[in-house]
Length: 389
View 1: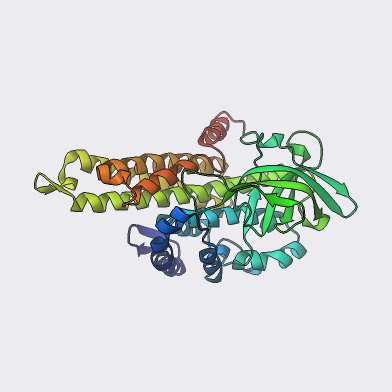
View 2 (view 1 turned 90 degrees about the vertical axis):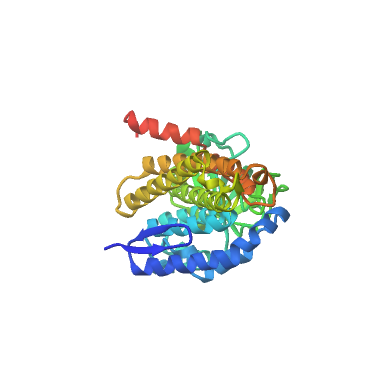
């Protein structure tokens, strides 16, 4: 049985009445606590740590996790639609929640019961914020060539290396770091759960980005960082597989965030087109504008359908890697087109910071790059079609 929830922008079909109540709570929180702060915080590059802590207290950070770990046991399709609503209000917050999910993933899926009991309650409750460390200055799309090393000395690893493009870099309480404990290639990579306060771990100054300025992105230096063996997730040599599995989930998160940004841009463009009058009529009445809006709405709806389908496959225990790549590819490309067209609908006004669509336009671009560029998504999809995966 499906349940209908009519939000401010979207009418959703949800699996339970509990999910309907959850979506209503999230929309209310986003409208009151996130949307009014977004423009100023992005202008000043103020990281919304308080908002993330509040989401933890509301149980949002624990939504997709089992109840025995302190989660809410919500299906992925519900969690992703929550991410979409958060991103519609403020992309930085949606992306932060998605990255935190990515950072928690190895602990949830490969952590021992002792590791999970020790760290998961604070992670899911919002008092500990995570970062995900895979990319390096010379290892981006070719992640298997990473060179950060972890040398085993007694009961701890000594980590040396350089990580790049780390969301929450310098502000996270812990980092899930993929490091080289063995020989070259993917089989030499392991996964460590690193305390953000570790001696020898430092962040370089934040990157100066086109958009998403309230979300800190920085390079991390590991200089003789000691990490206890008990903080390894899984066995040595399993890190690359853990990383890829986490990215499959993370790509769905980014797809949902992209749909949220695109929906926000569509909402703004429709509202403006209804109010703005030329030649004695609202510009929404003119075919040139109405067709543009129709294409935007279709792109948003089809992107949402793709990520929901992939999420339902994940919830059903079916393979979903290819569908996650498709959802990430289609949703982020659509967000770029929709935000571009939203600026066009607003004309000169859209190019100013008096209206939010120029911010949506700048924010959409990064979503085509993070969690694997869209060229990598095409590679994943193409290989699956060729029978390579």
